[in-house]
Length: 210
Image (cartoon, rainbow, N blue to C red; front, side):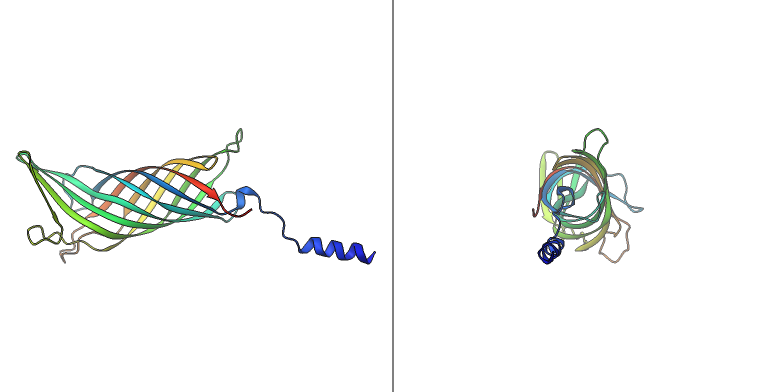
């Protein structure tokens, strides 16, 4: 009997295997950005099309809830039509660091298909700011801090990321809206100019552990 007791105790000390759905995930993702300025002090602006690409991780809290931090390079800004054949583009690129809460659940007919929604805060660290102008087929580009441009922007911004999509096994496709909560203006004028980005994203995750 004592051998059975020792065996039972040893089995109790062995951790149960973690199901595949409850293992952490690390992966890559990318997408197309449709960005423009928003805010009370922004006039008529057009979209700047750019890209974003980065890495993410997902740490399950339950079968339907997970924390999903990430880091991505994101091309943002806006385009403008100043009239008289003059157009311009404000090119602001950031390292975005979102920490999202993800809610997902499998469709009843197929457990490999999981609709999801995400939401959470993000910090944006500016890595590039340029202004490009075009007129009569001629173009010029300069850094935002150039004396001829003097477009002063904050180097760190706070925002909110919202999204929804569909997971197909370890692949996901979705939409993400990046809502800037901090004005980019750093001139002291307190102008209300914020980044707005709608992104189409896709990615692939790799399950960690066994």
